[in-house]
Image (cartoon, rainbow, N blue to C red; front, side):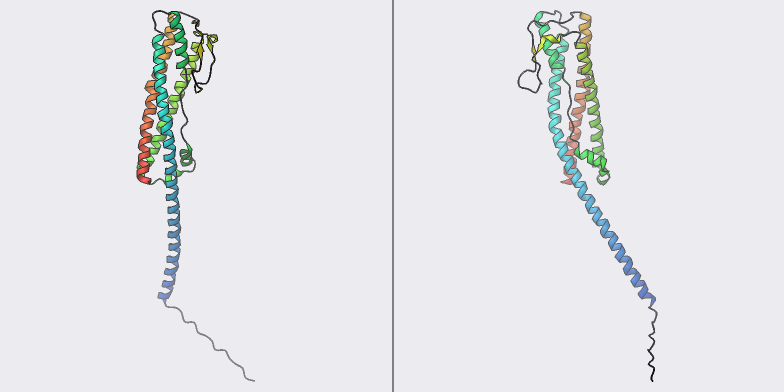
Length: 249
């Protein structure tokens, strides 16, 4: 019986250059995968950056409409407050002057304010999206926009608190019974009617001057602080919108 012997195959060691080549190929494959993933993430970040900036422009354009309306309303309120301030210093409180004081007081005591369009800003803050903005000039402009917007809100709150104090003091001077048919100022027509025989609760000169000083304080808060802040905000928002469009159009 014959026994067949299988020949033993000899494995010769690979040349070191072949090992080096295989290692190099694996390294290149890993690096290419890393670069591809990095490129994908980079492209995704740039797309999100553009989306954030486009959303910011939409918000700025909405704000522009509201700010322009608020500037008009504020200038009108300044005229009304100035008229009331002057009328309170009238040398004689005739019947017609007292009726006029009622009318001016009702037209001067409105709150100010509007809501900023906040969708894009909320996303940038809540998701850390500000880090995606590569243009440092744009980043600085957005931060400045947020800071000046806070100034507007602060001045808005100060003025409205002063208006509340204004109404509290007015209750000692004006009889609400003589103010009829109160309506929302946005409704058609005048939002109130004053009785033709309306008279002040007091004619004390010192008390009226103190009330005039309250009105003067409202004028300062409105004209020097609030109006100045919204005018500045309009300029900053217009510059920011132009900067974003220039860099992300």
